[in-house]
Length: 33
Image (cartoon, rainbow, N blue to C red; front, side, top):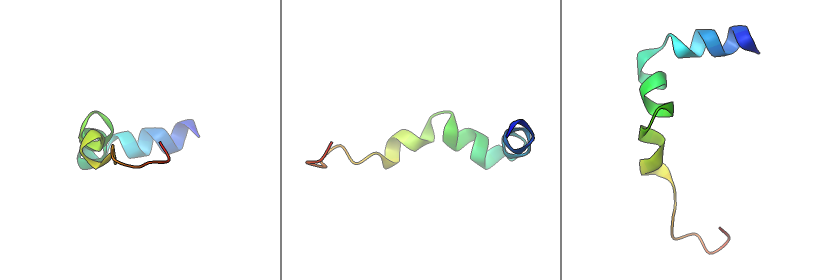
């Protein structure tokens, strides 16, 4: 798993997404939580 995370962390768009841009995709209006 460590090697997979290292590969993904070297892809700049994915790194930027997981460091903060994912918050734009959270559905805060979902009644299930």
